[in-house]
Length: 191
Image (cartoon, rainbow, N blue to C red):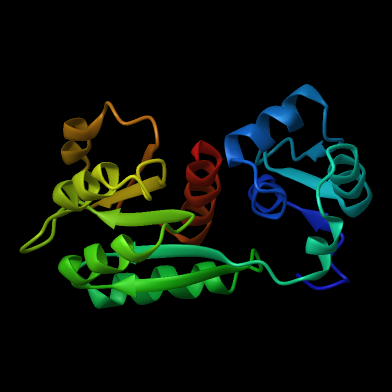
């Protein structure tokens, strides 16, 4: 993030301070981090001064505020145009997300075995290794076991098969830019 940045989302607070997004959201709700909440979107905005005060109070390195942060997201969908659509929206959102896209779920599993992203956006219905199998692999790997997952599907009835996972959010296709961005922020708050 550049020195000019003066407002942060709850996901950015988590990435900067090394705390889970849901913990950052709890701090916002309780007032431990001073912030304003948009009454329409319910999204939090935190001033630079508030985040500096919070980080100093908890002994966190505030120099992170002036360095670019990496907020990796992995997108897995067998349709390349969907991967491109999601990548474009997220990378142009200004949230600091770096997006890796895979139309081959097997290649995505290999990537996920290397390091944990902040979020996985995962299509449920895919040929070969389907989304359910990828989700199982994510949960079995200690490195990615607590990674938030946003499941997407053109068949929302498939979502009922994965209702027990508290780190999973669901988004039915088709979706627009705003729906995707809102779902991503909500999913990041789970982690």
